[in-house]
Length: 282
Image (cartoon, rainbow, N blue to C red; front, side):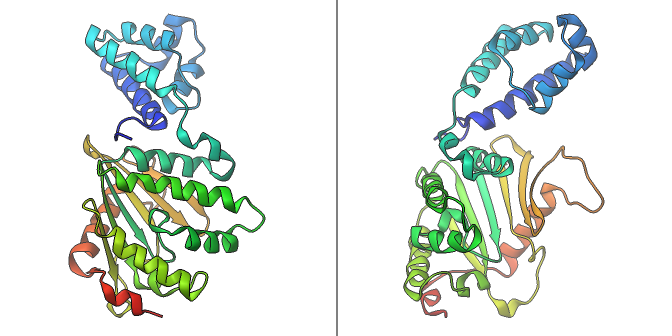
C-alpha cells in the first residue's frame, strides 16, 4: 500500500486540509455553521474527527473557503478515498481506538522508528512468538485474531515504500517468551528481516546502563510532508496515547520531536548492530 492510501490517514488529512482552508479564508467555525444552517458543533466535530464528512459537504466547504478548481478536485478525491473501508476493519474487536490509529500511521508513514524495552516489536514477531506472548498478555481474548492481525501488519516491511528503524533494549533479546526453540526462531527472524534494504535493527547492550527515555516504549511516524508531521505513539503502564505536533501539552508531557531526538541520540551513540551473536543469548 502506498504511503498515502490508508483511509484513516486520509480522513485525518482531509480534516486538516479543511481546517487550514477555513482559517486561511479568515472564517470562524461559527461563521461556517451559520452559512450552512448547521449547528456549531457539526463544524467542530468535522474538524476534530468525531464525525465523517460527505462528498456534498466537502464540495460546499471548498467553495465557501474560496479554494481553486484544482484544490477543490483534490479535496473531493481525498474525501472519496477516505470513505473506503480499511483492510483492518475485520480486526476492530481486538483493537483499541489508539491502536487502530497506530496501524493507519504505520501504513502511511514514510519513516517508522520503533524503540522497545520489553518485548519484540509487533512488526518483527514470528507467529510462534506472538502467540506465546499474547496468550500471557490477553488471556480470554481472541488470541488467534490478534496474531492474524499482527502477521498481516508485517506486509508493510516488504513493500520497500517506507523505511523502518528499530532499537531494542538487550532485555528484549534475552526475555524468554515461549520455548527455547521459539526464541531461537525469533532471533533468526530478526537477522533475516535486518537484511531487508529498508529495515535497520539495532540493540542497546545492558552494559550501557541507562539512556534517554529507556523506560518508555515508543514509535515515531514521519510522513513525506516533513518534520512538522511527526506523530509519536507512546505506551505506558496506564495505557497508550498518540502525540502530534498540535496535541495539547499537559504538565511535563513531551513533544514528538523530543522522542525523535532521543531515538537519534541512542541510535548514533550507543546502539549496536545485531549479528550472529544474538543467537547465543540465553
